[in-house]
Length: 218
Image 1 (cartoon, helix red, strand yellow):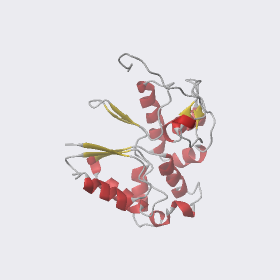
Image 2 (image 1 turned 90 degrees about the vertical axis):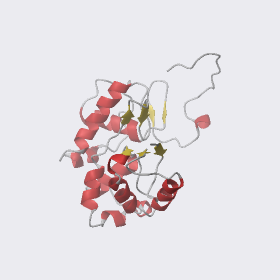
Image 3 (image 1 turned 90 degrees about the horizontal axis):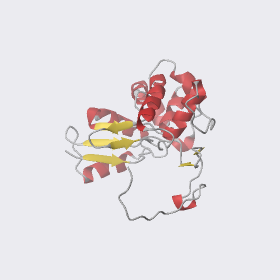
Image 4 (image 1 turned 135 degrees about the horizontal axis):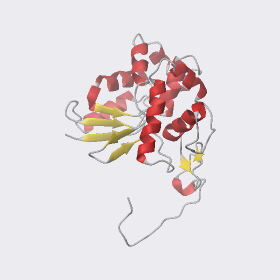
């Protein structure tokens, strides 16, 4: 039994299948972890969703920002951009089934036995793991409810960009969503940066390499 972790698929169905064949992935025996952004950009978003859904308990995934954007397009909230190549998926006869399945997927995956935690973008250092679990559940509950279009309409935006336990309502849900699905870097005060695309060496927050002669802290 093996566990495989794969990053953003982005609609690249053929490449995903080729990679799984290379490692001899066996559903029912092995487990596949996917870090989100299953869709958009590549030509096979429809096939990716159909395949991943068919894996059942053999897959564990989290939602990414492109997955949430797809749900917003499906709900009529956001525009279907040609570059995302989502039209075959949106017009598929099983689109309702696939996208209602997608919106019920989590933002956070935890394997207690393997000590493995997975999110699409990251986890703000202002949270401990218990807080991260609770925050993920709050957004997941809204996404899986009948009021999910209301949330999707309000999720776009960068503020608030710093965590506080006092956050309430849509602002709280927006911060949680941005932390799990859009964050790229964190400033020392915990503020989220959601736009930098540079390497860590060129991050907006100055970084230094620390060398020490000791066991690492956990």
